[in-house]
Length: 76
Image 1 (cartoon, one colour):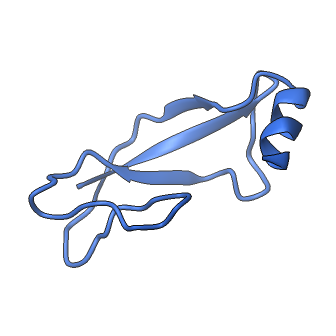
Image 2 (cartoon, rainbow, N blue to C red):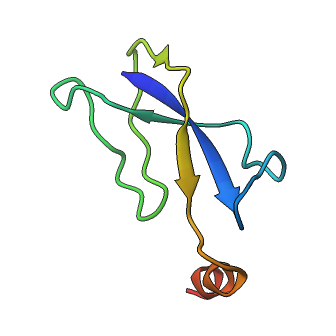
C-alpha cells in the first residue's frame, strides 16, 4: 500500500495550516489484501499489518472553486 501526499489548494493558494498540511492519504492498495472501512464519510483503507510506503510526489487537490462553493459544501 502507498501513502500519497496531498497538497490542498483554496483560491489558487496552497493551504499549509488548519490540518490541511501535511496531508497524506493511503491509496494504491491490493483489494485482495485489504479494503475501505465502512464509514459513511472520509473512508479510510484498513491498514491492519500492511507495510505502507510513502510516495514523495503530491496530488494537487483543488476541492473548491470559490468561497461560495466552500460554504455550499460545508452546509450540505
